[in-house]
Image (cartoon, rainbow, N blue to C red):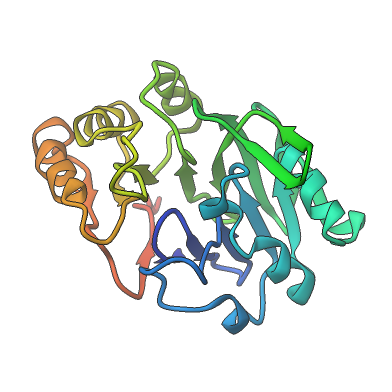
Length: 245
């Protein structure tokens, strides 16, 4: 069983059955949908950052410094964390296809079709492939966070290889003036391909209607998946179990 809390934009907190505390893309202070501020996060074991955009890096490095959490990201964000003084011993760089393990939790990095671009200071630029993550908890729950991405055919391959049970699906942009890479219809089709038990629409601005439009499409295209629309607080997920007598 896992406890999961949506923190707005693409940020999540996950607490595994053994108590491993994971944060994904913890942008909290500039996030109008977040129920907490970064300074309120007093414990973390693992922080995952999908790419270098402000709304995904957020306060991840500061939280890692304060809590001692392992910091996992692509190599541009890894370099940024080193520049900002995060000890190298806490940092795990990764890339699509690689699997890392922290406290019994395995994390497989996946392809995401987006961009990761950072300019930490004038005339300095860093870039690396953006990532998604499939998290395998100690008790076998599989959680897929695609990061920011458009619809692409190899989502079917991720489904075949990883069989995610919980998916965080991007459905819009975080700024009204910026076009979405994953439309509600695209996101519903990706959900159909993945076939999870639960999907949470993410990556949208507060007034966006795309989460509701996604839910309508998903009802038709992925009727076996439960849509958690704008969830508040923690929810728990426990996969179906078969007990042999």
